[in-house]
Structure formats: structure tokens, C-alpha cells
Image (cartoon, rainbow, N blue to C red; front, side, top):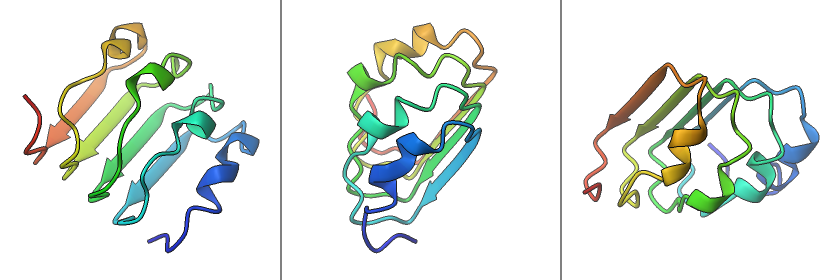
Length: 101
């Protein structure tokens, strides 16, 4: 649980980070400017972040991503076109995303 996003705004400094789990961060709105700097990412899990807004045009550099889990992500209305760039993606899990069309 993050009560503030001060750490999230510094994620770009963790260039060797391969796994990030973000859950139940009710005040988290966006952080993909930092996330996009983490090109060694292989696993990203986002769940129960009810206010989180994904910015699809910021996902392009995550080409090493193999696992993407989006659960209880109520603001997700569509999957980003950039998913086509994730040639290493082997697992995509989407659950309880009530606004996804």
C-alpha cells in the first residue's frame, strides 16, 4: 500500500528492476513516465488501483515484458495498441476490469 506516490515518481532510477507489483494504491493515478524508463521489466502486476489511469502511448519501451497482469482495474476501458510491440509477452491476465470494452 502506498499512501503517497513519492517512491513511484523515482522508479526510473531502478534500471535493473524486473518485477513490479502495485496493489491497493487508491491514490495512484499515473506513473508511466517513470515506468517507461525500465526497459528490463519482465513482470508487471497492477491490481486494485481504482484511480489508476494507464497512458497507452507511454508503454512502447517495455519490449522485454513477458508477464502483464491487470486485475480490478476499473478505469481500463481498452487495451493499448502498444501491446503489439511486446514481442516477449507470454502471459496476459485481465480480470475484473468492468469498464473494458
